[in-house]
Structures are given as C-alpha cells and as structure tokens.
Length: 435
Image (cartoon, rainbow, N blue to C red; front, side):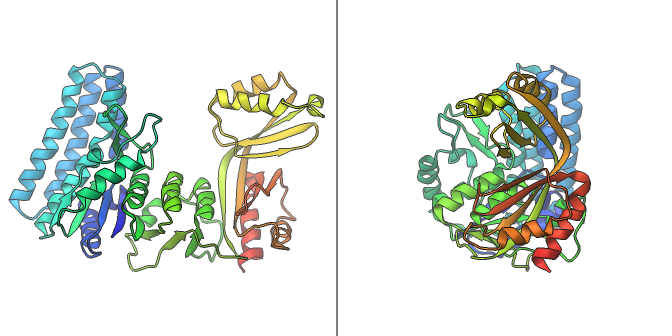
C-alpha cells in the first residue's frame, strides 16, 4: 500500500478535484491524504482573527464569501442531484457552525477547530465525488488516529495502533485529512503549516507503506519564481539529507518536517506533479549517490550579524551568551563562521533584529549586512571527495563572498553573497558544475 498526498492547489477547483480523483482511483488500493482547497486555510485564519477581535460582522462577511466559493464548486463538481444535496448539506452545516462562533467566547481551542474545517470540507467533497464515480472509498477521520503527545510531538505508537485496524475494512481506496489531529488533551489541533506532508509521512511510517507520494501542482507553485539559469533539469534522485537541505532553501513541494518519519522508517518519498502525472518525478530515499553534485538553490532576504570582541580570545562561554540572545527571541541561526575575535551569523527571520543587535552590543562591536542571499550547493560533499570543494570555489572566483560554510554537513557547501550578485553566482555555478 502507498500513501498519496495531494496539496491544496491540486484540489483547488472542481476540475482539479476530478483530476485528482482519477489519479487516486487509478493507482490502486492506497491511502489518500488531502489538504484543504487552496486559499481556505488562509481565509479561516482571517475568520479567526476577526473572532479574536470580536468583529462579528467581519467574520460573518468572510464566512459568507468562503461558503459561496464552496457552493459554486459543488455546482460544478457533481453530476447527480443526490451528491449535490448531500455535499451542500454538509458544507452548510460547517459554515453554520462557524457563524455560531461569532456569538461565543473565542480562544485558542476554538481557533484550532476553525482551522480544521478546510480539510474536513475537502475530504468530504472528494469522498462524495468518488462514490458518484462508483469507487468504493472509505473515509478515515484523521481525528480518530492522528494524535500529539504531551510534548506536542506526534504520538507514533498511538497513530500506528489506531490507523492499522482502520485499514482492515475492505475498500478500494482509503481517504483521510492532512494537517489536523488531536492533542494530548483530546482537543482538535494541527500539525502546523505543511502538516499534510507530515500527515502523509507519519501515516506511511505507521503502516509501513511501500512508498509515500507527494503530489503537487508544480506549475502553479512556480509561476512567480524568477528563472535565472537556463537549461535547468529536474533532479530525479535525492538522499533524504540532500532533500532536507533543499527544503530550507525554498523547495516548496516538500515541507522539511515531512522528511524525518519517512527517513527513519526507510520509506521512499516520491515527488510528483498532477500537471504531468506520467513524469517519473523525484525519488527521495536513504540511498546515497556517491561522488555527485545534485543541485544549487538560493534563499533571499538574509541578514548577517557580525560581532567583534577581544573578549572572545581564549574565553569560554562567550558563544553561549550570544546564542542565548537569539534563543530568547526564538530566532534561528542558519549559518555561522567564527575566528579568534569575531563571529558572523546569518538569519532569515528579521522580526527581532533590532532587539537582538541591541543586546549583542553588550559583548562587542556589532555590524549588520542586509539584502544578502544564501546559496547552497547540494550533493555528496564528504571531505574525502578530493576536488569537489575546489570546483565549487572556482565557480565563485569572480563573485564577492561574505561567508562560506563547509564541513557542517556532508551534503552542502553554502555561500553568502549580496542579492545583486545572486544571478551571476547561480549562472557561474551551473556552468561549472552541470555544463
């Protein structure tokens, strides 16, 4: 059995729901994980914002707008009056429940319930459409098996013991919701953004799936991406650690949290496109490709903080004090380089940059560089592969480099450059490494 996850853009319209239904029904007896229709979770967050601020009119207007979208989709999706009636009744009940919240006290528990409605809607719509097409489909409520423990982490033993018996029921296809779950208090909760990928990976690990497939509308997700390098080609195979590196650098089709459960269970993940279903996609597993460079990726809007202090020299505890400042503002450091009297750190979250810099000035002279770009070369970068690092460095010989990261991982070499030099750097690396 495989686990097939379909993202929000893949089920964003009636025509796309029909396409996904055909792909799922034609793939065999598998477990399908669905996200909410594209735009739904953002709108539900907007509704929750109004409810927090006790703006009942704003919430009602937004609820009505979202309900109209679903009713239009229903009219386009089903061919029988009975299917339209059943789905309309379900959708109207969901939105009546949301409207009722405008008359009640609203807090975090209610917010999680609001955010869960998108997946409940999309899965019910898909179930009814598949039944209309003659598919024997069984809807497995994620709230019955997907659970968090007291630390807020997925309870994998609970997931396994509750999901496996559900699959004993005979059906041609199984369907469930991504993203949503219950917490240790049995309240409705969620797996945060990208949670549908996480659901698929957790479910795949729980049932020992043959493969986890992450289906996405790739063309729709990359319409706005700048094309800075010509003659690019798809990467057909990645190690899990290589995929983890690329996920941070903007590989939107795979959420970083998706990787770990599949990696530990040794279950391959395949990235596929609903726009090109016959394409082989990208396979991610634990098998390394020795001596190869796979890809180059970049991330914009990076800030670099440099602190220089003679107190670092032969001192212990200095870096701990620096890191504690970042920890207090819940800001992750992406890349770090140190010398005897200085340390440079890059961050991609600048919400608390001014506060961090203010506190760092207690320990030394601080400078900040903005509008930087982090470029990552991903592949088999084990230090014993003689010549790999020189090839990469040679490509960057005409580019001013602010920082270099090598040796922290066996799978990447990273460079920090000005955003204005990003295009030249990517083109130089492509010509040197892939020509």
